Length: 96
Image (tube, rainbow, N blue to C red):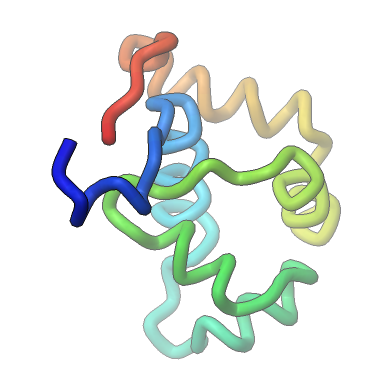
């Protein structure tokens, strides 16, 4: 691993697809800024920016819970949606 990539750490594929689902399904309007999305979902806008990164990020469960609560969905239902959409890609792999 190069020094440039050392600060990134591991991003597990499950985290990538959780972020990808949120980004592709819930953060779709070009008319809404990351700051506004942050306020809508009860998180700092930097979190929204991290979610929208190509590989997502290692989101804490508390952050995901807050986002799901503010979207009006239970965590269990959210994970069912992610699994339905990306189930064949989900495993314990990671990338740097």
